[in-house]
Length: 111
Length: 112
Image (cartoon, rainbow over all chains, first blue to last red; front, side, top):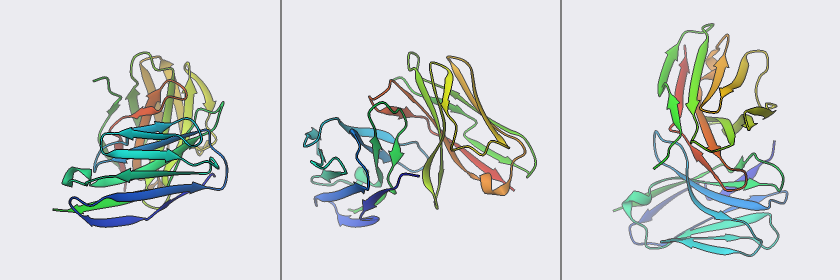
């Protein structure tokens, strides 16, 4: 199946630091989504991107839809302990309903 | 807040037994998905429905898995017979096409 590669796989950062993670694909997507998953819960949608080059913010989170449509980036500024979790990217093609998920980035924030 | 409700939250069963997982999608959402999450494979699409019609179930082992939407408020995923390799967290998600989807809290299945 479609493989979306996320990096890094895991991150350990100090509270207050900024975080960057990215997602790359071998094929083009027309929508990129970023989800966060807390332990024991389902993924929760953070940001949706619908246009190549688009830069969208949601509070301390900023995500970008890569120009090539094969990648996307998520940045978290001034991390706090509740940012801990697994972050997933997901891609969707025009006319298709299903999402292809990335491998996830596990974030640990040290107080 | 509207939410996707999945039951049961946890299920432990013996190999060979039938397992049924249920999902109540958000009212008004016309697309419903079943995903399975494991450490090794991550999130894998099993099946999805649009307006209650199955559109894609190619991710499901057809010999033992079946997914249905008897009505707009209920989606079911059944495994018969269950095997240890089916142990995973099964998520249901619902939404309107192309606007991101809302996931339930999942059913953690353990087959012993």
